[in-house]
Image (cartoon, rainbow over all chains, first blue to last red; front, side, top):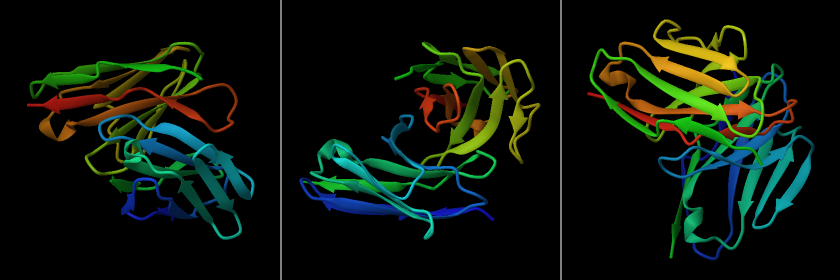
Length: 109
Length: 116
């Protein structure tokens, strides 16, 4: 079966760095996405990786290793507004999006 | 960027009634739109894929007669929850794919349905 694993919840301190991991087993691979979702709102796109390596976008970076079925989202200089759920999603060989359950990130002052 | 608008944001209805939710792509044409539902503290669950001018493709376990999807134009898809029951109360979200499949989906704001 297809499976995406990410931690349920993480806590970090304002101003610090946090890494949210995502491992996947899917039938084929056509890209991995990270989305941010604040409670009660729709997800917003953060990043897209299809090749191995690190993609940096301001305070957020996303890393992919296809051979390991692994990705992480790195958030630097954490702000209180970064408290949200972070969803990892993989597009499989049929171009269907398989969603992880999300990681709830709690930022403390 | 691209904008997807969903309406209504909130709806409360009585059990047994039907509710229609609209999803519009405001500044692009979307040949494919997706409908999700999300229960509290859970991930998005894909309900169906809506293609303009053809029947929607429903995921396993989703009742097509209960959740009617119409994608009549390149900018509008609708989800109608028929004969709603309290267990249908959920957060319904649509997304639209812009252009070729480069990956990014654009999401509507979501519609929170409460069935009394």
